[in-house]
Image (cartoon, rainbow, N blue to C red; front, side, top):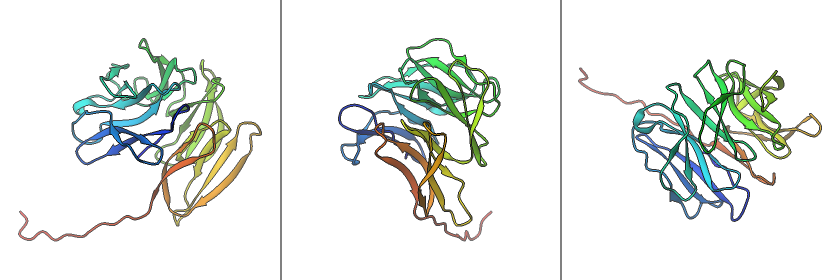
Length: 252
């Protein structure tokens, strides 16, 4: 489950429900009540990645492989309805992220190596932003001047920044787990877990350039989000994991 709260009005959450046969986007109130399904994509396996609220809360961007086809960037109304396709390149496009003014949607693409691109949110030609092979998970800074992204998945990652117009990139953080996000005060992230699965939830402060620990999480963690006012942090946590050993007799 991935959740991200919008800025205005009653708090909502957008959820990605991953099932064995399909995945869909749902919305609900911040306490989990009033759940409503927004999409009906169907198809097998994972078909939706990274739903994100627009700054005005009117739309949701997502990456979707309709019917098991190519993964592209779409936008749908926050009240449901028809999806609007923004990318059509045969390469894989995933992890959409809105610019602060709502005019652009950043995304990771494999069309020229693995790089960050952006496309006008109303439709148009995509533009390459990074020139740094392996760029992943784009996040624009609160002031709209910088694009932050990570490199290194599936191992420990580093976080970099580049001007939204492109240019030379600078490393900001090292040894970051894939669960990280930007908020109004800085970059919230998990450190790489130790051999017992514990990780520190930390904040890299934009104002000071320093990192401070918020708390240690004792169980294995995943996705991470922060409310627009910076008062609430949401993350996923693995409480229990099990498997069974089965015997199949007379197998041929």
